[in-house]
Image (cartoon, rainbow, N blue to C red; front, side, top):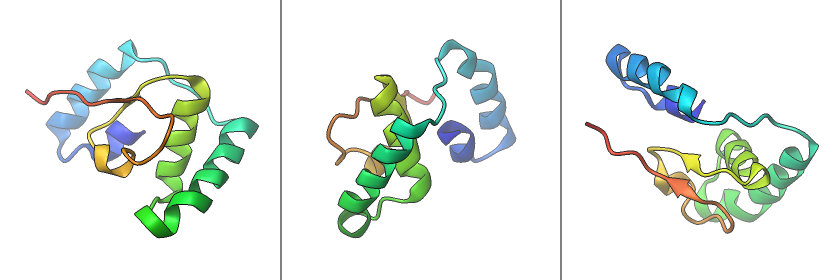
Length: 89
């Protein structure tokens, strides 16, 4: 979802859609929801963490998956998250 939202044009969206199959997709569950709430409590005021970014970060942490994102600044302050930033060609 993070990649799709970050696409700035149809070409980027097509590239994302063709490449995303190589990554595991994790779904939101109770553990993710609870962690997202905790992240919001800790980082909304200090870092401007939004609800969608909290859910994405919590999903990544609970599932123990690297987060593939172009928006490192949205997540770099969160303990326990592993960020993977792709190189745009």
